[in-house]
Length: 182
Image (cartoon, rainbow, N blue to C red; front, side, top):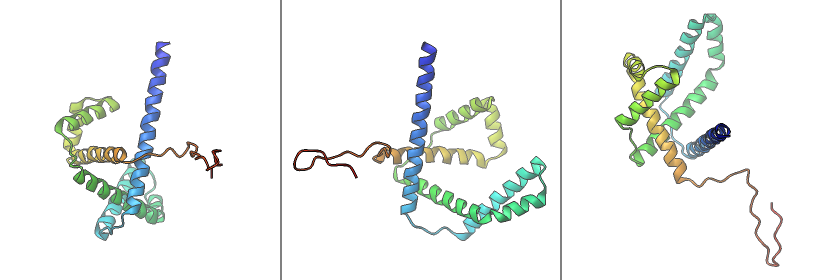
């Protein structure tokens, strides 16, 4: 009985986290859509080129045909450019929220995240740190990710969340009987 209770609590916590994640993403999407700003073409071009290179390297590591991969990359370039632009806009909006809310990531929070990555991957924190030292930009990416998570949480806390699945409230008409919902 206790095991069932713990499993139910775990499942409920997972559902709650997923609900919060979806709410945060919708809030961020709405905010990004409401703010218009131009992105430097060089930044977008560089990000698309970086993505394409990562795809080529991964395909090569998997032993896929280089010509076929090149065709796939060319065919999906417009879609990827749109995705990269969307991701960059989200990044800049989250940076602005972080700045406005004076959000930062402490060394303790960073180390906690490193330890969690180690637990998730079945390795020690020192192994994860060594991996980050081999790729110096990765630690900065992790710090930015954690700061953006804080910005998403600040955004969610500042917003009024409306459950779209809940029935709309009905208000009584002047005669006292409820009006039919629209």
